[in-house]
Image (tube, rainbow, N blue to C red):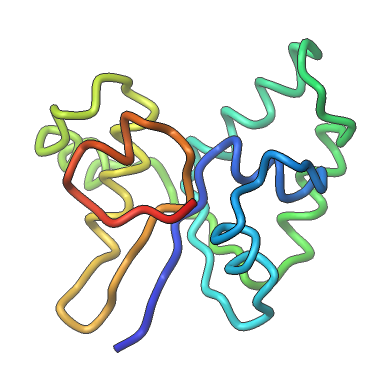
Length: 135
């Protein structure tokens, strides 16, 4: 059985910025050169928006973020398409729309042969009960 990891917004930023807030389990997965990492398009958009605001401790620039994702072959950017939007209807236990879309992406990727975990510290995602999380 294979394992796929969906990367949340702050997880992505903390990883690329070598930030100490990155959880140990998430850091271990993100350090694995063979890990399969799903990056929902909403995560990439949200990360860029956070950097654009400039009110964060992150030192990585928007261009560096985009280049790092492009250069790391483990990242697969998945679209925010109709299937994700439809799946969010099943994620009402997650109160925030961006987080619903992340959980919906994980649920769409998950199959009988593939386990999925979201790399996140977000309590709403961790407590929704819809998908496994690691931090």
